[in-house]
Each structure stands twice: as structure tokens, then as C-alpha cells.
Amino acid sequence: MNQNTNTTSTVIEHKARMPHPAFLLEGGIDALTGVNRIAQSSGLPDALLQLVSLRASQLNGCSWCVVDHTKQLLDGGTAPEHVAAIAAWRDAPYFTARERAALAFTEALTRLADHHDPVSDELWAEMLDCFDRREISGLLFEIGAINVWNRINAAIRQPAGAR
Image (cartoon, rainbow, N blue to C red; front, side, top):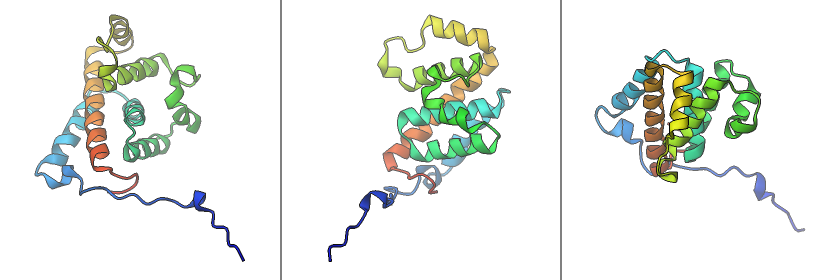
């Protein structure tokens, strides 16, 4: 009897290449979470910070951060369709002008090498229309921090859900 095994439904286990550097180096976790705390001190809503972190993580292919920030948004009360549409935010009806500006800013700063002038004057003007300097500073810290997290996690292949 020929037994047909369905391998397409088998979950593939992933293991990190090494323990997370944020925990290996003294002060590593404090330094990284400190940058996040600075962003949070800007007064921006947590949901907006999570939104930009999720979008940068999607662009960078960081599974751990995509899962974590999706969970945080959903646990914080963001509608599932809003979260599901983040990767297609330009064409989805769920995003405010502030969210759209923050997402465009996130993409520009995450993909620096894609353009000779990643943050155009038009994008900067849009940011100034939607945010004050303190809030822009908070976004700069949040986007910078998530890109560091993403790069570390990508290098060590930190799997989603694993610590």
C-alpha cells in the first residue's frame, strides 16, 4: 500500500544561530529598550509606534518582530482588518493622514538605499503637517530602534515566538 504523506502542512522548525546578542552583551537589552523608551516619551500613541514597527519589520523580513508587533496591536484593540492591511496601507481605507505619513516615513527610513534622497522635501512637509518636532523625534527613534532589532534578528535568524 502506498502511503501518501502530506508534507505541505508540516510546520518547519527554525532555530536561531546563536543566543540573542541583546542578552549576551552586558547592557545590550537596556540599550535597545532604552531607545524604545525614548520614542515612547514623545507622547505618540503606542498603537502608532507599534504600527511603524510592524511595517519596518515586514519590509525587513523579521518574523519575530512581525509576530510580536501584530500581537501587540491586536491586544491593544487595533481592528484586525487594520493590522492585516498594513502591508498595503496605500490602497487600504483604514489609515488616517497621520498613520499614512508615519508609514511613508518608516518606509523611506527603512529603505535608505532605494533613493538618493530618501526623505524628500514633500515627505518632510507631510510630516510637519501631521506631527510636531517632538513627535517626529519619537518616530525617528522608534524607526531607528526597530531597524536595529530587525537587523540583529535577521542576522541570527531569530525565529518568531522564540526568546
